[in-house]
Image (cartoon, rainbow, N blue to C red):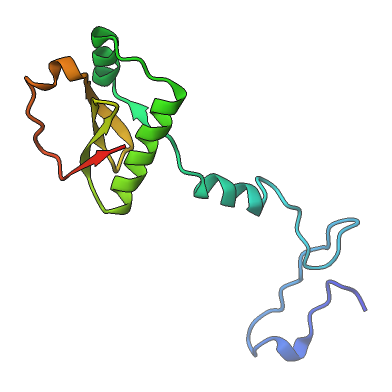
Length: 133
């Protein structure tokens, strides 16, 4: 009996039997070739917490005000954004070593940054949380 044969008992009356597709050469029946990333790779990429991005405005503020961002500062900023996200915040101000970062938590984007020297002049509006990281 051929692998492409159709059992006539399984075909409803009035319907022409449809031949089964030919089996791929060298493959097993029901097995398909795997393409793309593995399940483990997809799982790792979706469970890893992304860092934060900086808007053009925030980058200009950092440069103009001479605010240095080291790995430790970025890690603390990212942790603060993660904590704000865990509480359901949308817009937050995250304080790291006296520098205030206004962050869109949903987009994980720093909107602006204010150093301690300029902090006295600023009022933070449209935020729903504050995090000290």
